[in-house]
Amino acid sequence: MTDKLTVPQKLLLAALEARKKSATFTAEDLVVQAWKLYPDTFGLSGYGDQYPDSNRVLTNIMGTKGMRGKGWLRKVGEKQYRLSSAGLKDGEGLLEQSAEPGDTKKTEYLRAELDRGSLAALDRLVSTGAARKALDQTGDKISFHDACGFWDITARSNANTLNARLASTTVILERASEIVAASGAAAGLKLPHSTISREDIRKLVQLHEEMLSIFRTELDVIRKRIDERLERKSRPF
Image (cartoon, rainbow, N blue to C red):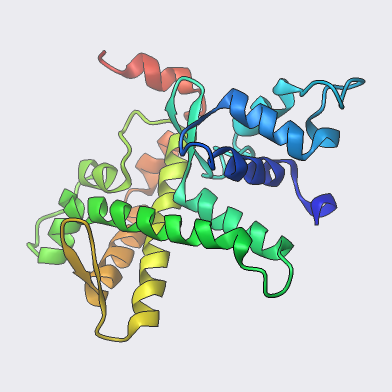
């Protein structure tokens, strides 16, 4: 299994280990954990058994092909990260592939936490202006500003942030659909501050897909903004 993993996948599994201590972890935490798990991949050339190669880890965090480009990591502070819902889901898949038949220990904690996190994130989605217009069927036109609120981005976000938030939204809605489908046709979900029906979830999935199409031009502009410094410089304070 290890030989078939890509470098970003190995980092994803290292991130799962790092977050066992704290949901928020630093780049340094990830560097050390990746080296402990895969010294041949993340060890410093010539000194692999003694020191980690931080550059190898950092370059695979950033960039369109790195962890953030894949939507697996959210940056929450200076060199501080959290796994996104997409990262948790894909990490769960990797753990299941490596688990022995009948062994659920590797994924039990992950499934439970993903479900709680998804419910909280879904609660936020439901409260957004775009969601309210779609669910209440007000007939009001949904703006790009509404869409940004739904995806938890701004027009000044960079490509990494956009990819992570879009991936997380997709995963959250997919997981919600799976939960209600497994619970029965009339079932809904109780959220921290509201309750959402199966039909409401269907409408949110449709809304998400329609906004991706309607605002394709605006999203393409953000996708070209790969330098995080541009986002920071554009902030008013």
